[in-house]
Length: 167
Image 1: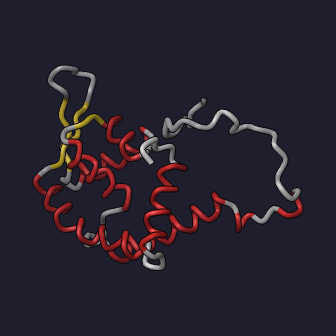
Image 2: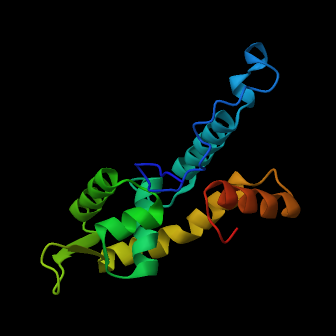
């Protein structure tokens, strides 16, 4: 199994398979493909996030990094990137923007001077306390058209597609 160089996510061994497209190339409709539908669903979710989040300066990925930081406690940039499926360069930029807002602090690890530790500040904790209820509402709004069984199914299937072995 190889892995995606951006997220380190294991890829199926047949990802480069030369299997023919079912129905032939003339039947290929990009609007019916998994990548297109996932992208549209993600765009819809981000639009709902941007309209609903309690702090309009906070982006979805910044919220994800801060939430992971709260859950994990003081952590390396690398660990936060892995926990949020964000590549190292992007995570670094997000963390820098959060630091500039005073929502997280950086310090050198006491046992490994090469490692930078990221942790929430009191202001960061407050922003999370203020925004988490609206984040839960965002998830509800994103799945509003789904019944209870469909909600369980979509979350299960997305975890499975993402390679989460605990799906």
